[in-house]
Amino acid sequence: MKKNHPPFGLGTRRSFFGRFASGAAALSILVRGRAQPAPRKLGIAIAGLGGYATGQLAPALKLTQHVEIRGVVTGSLDKGRQWAREFGFPENYIYSYDKMSRLADNRDIDIVYVVTPNALHLAHASAAAWAGKHVICEKPLALTVSECNAMMAACRANKVKLSVGYRLQFEPHFNELKRLARDGDFGAFKTMSGGLSFRMTRPQWRAERKLAGGGPLMDLGIYAVQAACMAAGANPVAITARELPKRRPEFFRDVEETIEWTMEFANGAKGAFSTSYDQGLDRFRAEGDKGWFELAPAFQYGALKANTSRGPFTPAAVPPSQQAVQIDNFAQCVREGRESPVSGEMGRRDMVILEAIYKSAAERGKRIEIAV
Ligand code: NAD
View (cartoon, rainbow, N blue to C red):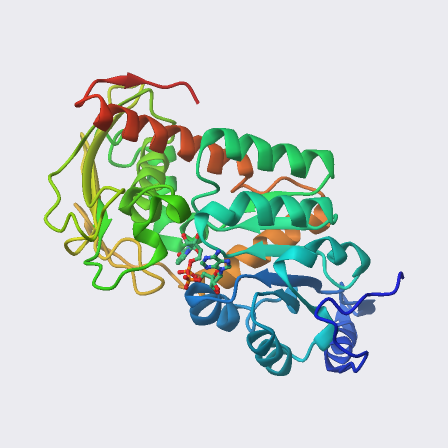
């Protein structure tokens, strides 16, 4: 293994707890009466130690079976040190954003999880890919379709896998939605509705075009886009959209505050959705000729609730962390050399849809045909 340079000019002091933890995980286990070595856990580094990384991914990474955290990329050495202490990895596995290329020297890290503001996804995911690391990138994958193309090209060029942080693709209520779409218990879902909104009360990068690429559509509306594609079991063929007048224009200077859109599918199915930073909404409903399925809340981290025309739907088991399941799934894909079911291609598809929504809204509701 090549020598790892301390990226923050740190000394060479190292804690071997991280190594010890992975060594412990590699203890033999009994499989069919014969001792088999447990597969080595893959190492992950989190890039961006903000709200989602701290509040959701850190707890999830204490539950993952196939991955353990072995590093971070951060602009704050203090934060990095806190994570190193909490997770027991050496301090020279703390990288600054401009030294991400040094990840190439670190064989203990297999995956980089990019959790920075949207505008930085392309740069950070590409830096990880060029360092030879597999990438999970948070949603939205990037700011534009052409940025998605560039990120996917960087991953292809370096033969690394790319996945998007779509945690709900692995969630049991959404698995049931996908099953219903496939098996047709309620007929094809022809009418869909819902959306995700919250009232933003303090200025943040999410309301700045430069860092977010847009407003609530990029951040929250994307969940309804995902759910609609799951319920339709297909990609949409046309979009219409309109932006609603801003109630707080001083707050949402260059992004939408509220936007509504429709998605049409080739089989005639149609969905009508909205997203906003001015109100509360968390619901998804899909109706077929023989019944309906509704989620409310639909898009939270836990405790989703489903009702159907046949009565409440309760999954047999709900894992304690959506994110742990999502991250473990990617680790298994990496290990087995498979593409993630939540691939860069899916992130790109959603960006095609979001771009069409913005285009239609800018053209006063013109119907925009898309091919994805
Ligand atoms: P956040 O603002 O809490 O954290 C962002 C982090 O990026 C911070 O640590 C910040 O220091 C760092 N950063 C690095 N360079 C920066 C720069 N130039 N400007 C601002 N911050 C910079 O945001 P968050 O809520 O953690 O969101 C991060 C990403 O995760 C976003 O893409 C968001 O869409 C996504 N996210 C996904 C989910 C989900 O459920 N999948 C939930 C929340 C957020």
